[in-house]
Image 1 (tube, rainbow over the protein chains, first blue to last red):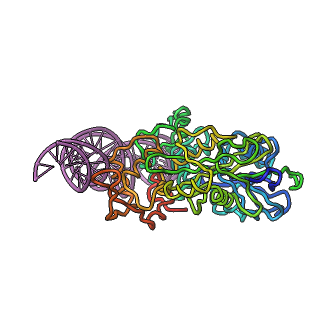
Image 2: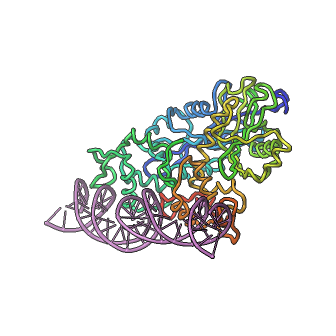
Image 3: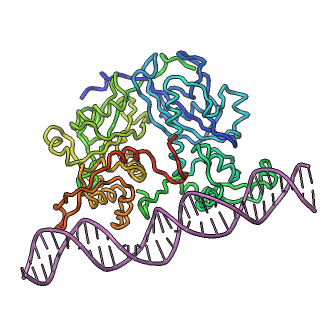
Length: 233
Length: 233
DNA sequence: ATTATTAATTGTCGTTTTGACATTTAATAT
DNA sequence: ATATTAAATGTCAAAACGACAATTAATAAT
């Protein structure tokens, strides 16, 4: 086998697909690229992996630098490494998808940074292979959200069932029956009903719920049922 | 933002977690590392990503070079990029897991290469972070296999239901009820019953089945049921 | 030839979950 | 007092599930 020294070295970057929910629509956070090539074109939030950080840490750092966001849900998507994906120099990029509550960070974003939210369906064309990254992230989000309670990451601490349903509908691009949805969500035992109501959406008002954090942590792992009585490895 | 030129460059490698099934047990393919550091210690099959190939292509090439295997099921696991994971020089590694039918390649392996099969539970300690890679791959295999018909990749073209069940039991490290398993497998409509029987395992013999390849391709995508009547994005 | 043996195959039943569907309820506006 | 609007909840038939045991097809033993 070959020695280390004779092997080629590459740039390694991270790119973050940041999904957010504003109560009505699933959105994605984009920035105008600040360096050549493709300067001033819309792009995912990204940056190079530094010498003393892992890609995971780089993604966290880059996200914070570009948006002010910290401690948000972040998950590796996959690596993008076609030799010619960056025209200047070979760069491998690790894709991440992030989930945040838009309203929580709205002010911060508008004031301090150049990031902008777009409807998924109305986003501009992106540089390099970023459009593919978005498509992949969208698919993975849907896949994962069908089996894990991660969509709560995009909601405020207090949220209503109708809000939650709209979010599911947006992610899955489909309509869901209110009665069946409510039944299934209740059966998870993840929600705690609060006294307070959200009156903004209707005259009657919808009860707020919050996450049962203990059960939430326990259920982050898969809850599959092809194999009965399955226990973690 | 910084220029490309001022950014650090890294080695990028691939490491393959190769799972196989011999009819009885789930096994993993390991090699003795051929270069410093940690030379002659057990390791995953890996290699550096060359200048003119993607990581996916590198994984294919490395697998073929080390085992003679070609055109096998290969899927990206995740990237491993802790700054100090390789003591010589910073190297990021893309983990892949592969699925093959052990019997198909047995002779080839023993004769031409130094790879060796181990029971998952009896494998030696591996170099660097390869033990973590194996653990991650095992979890992902189980997760994916619960939702997608990928385990067939580890079986011969003709296989029996009892064989298939043992494989499921191995992957999930659990016992499954014969009657319920058979019912569920049949309901997928993925199997075609053949005339021939496998007499090696019993006096009565077990009917061979083969995959319905058309339905197999269609079902490689997720078949979830949290969202009724879900169609692909 | 009959019987024993072994693993493969198939069946039942009560419970739970599912998907499709409509009515009632709580608040505000008229 | 009534209309309006969205939230919350109920029913029912069909399907899927999990737990459980009996039958069948072939060979081996007597």
